[in-house]
Amino acid sequence: MCPFIVRNISDAERIIRMVLGVFGMLLGFLFIQGPGGTLLGILGGLSFITGAAGWCGIYVLLKKELPVEESPSEEK
Image 1 (cartoon, one colour):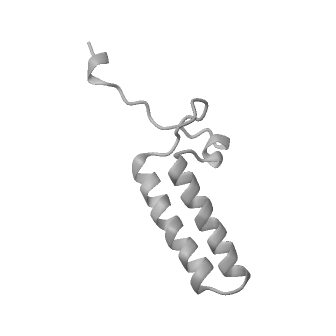
Image 2: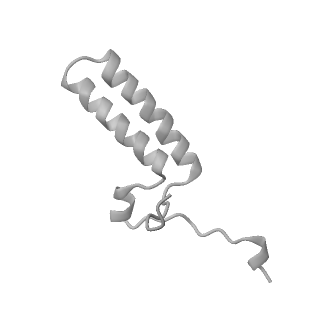
């Protein structure tokens, strides 16, 4: 992963985005004809890419970050 991109999507949300992205791409590009299908396929692809990367640009604009997890070694 790139050192300058900080993940802002949780693991559960990443999995959901990737599964729904694949479903949207299949549905949009293979089963729905016309501009609606193309739009659904593109949105599905975008959802899959953000899930795979673990980074969402809209979350950056909204200043949403992952909660900081404390490791057991840091507790005193």
